Length: 83
Image (tube, rainbow, N blue to C red):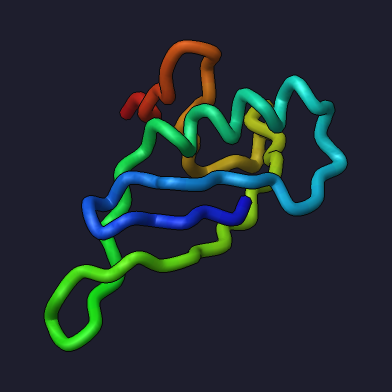
């Protein structure tokens, strides 16, 4: 993902650079990143617009060797891991 974060912390632009995921999955993923809020970059103590790149991958959540469950992406929300 390539994200242009505005000074307010909200993404002004989200793009999937390259993916082996199905298009409907990458569209959903991009939509969730568009709803996220980020800490804006700063320059001399003031917030500035900035580009950031985030790599997204899949993990096998059914593996018996898995020590910690990560959050789960659902169509309507991102669900935090239960403890």
